[in-house]
Amino acid sequence: MIRFSAIALTAALASTSVFAQSMEVIKNGTHDGFMGPDDKFTGSAYIEPVFANEDPFVVNGGKVTFLPGARSHWHTHPAGQVLVVTDGAGWVQEEGQEKQLMEPGDVVWCPPGVKHWHGATDTTAVTHIAIQQVENGENVTWMEAVTDEQFGGETP
Image (cartoon, rainbow, N blue to C red; front, side, top):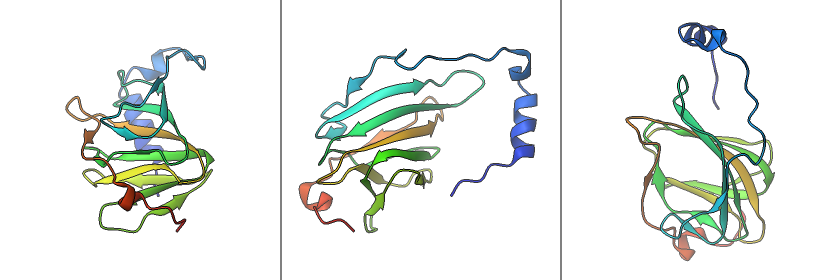
């Protein structure tokens, strides 16, 4: 679970020029989506960029929809990742642990450097918002594919 300190957030925002700027609404569909490449995903994963790493924020986010059987490859994030599940049902797994079911409203926190994967179940699609902090210009390190055996097919 992630907890944000209102005092820390206010102090961080006050130290930037955020309060001197105007609000901006980025319209849905502004950024072109794309299919997840085969060297990072197995199956059909559609990625829609939501927001980019731009000053003063050091995070980026995207909406990812996995069709049944689709999943990311194993990967890590240098500064961690938050997944907010918005639709469907999927699985998430940390290396060496049992996979876990994730459903709408669930928030998944993956700490920095923890090897994991996430995606649909074998029978259901899932959509989540993925938010990653950028550290030294990087937000993810991709690794090997999740095998069919690792993916399995039984709902936990």
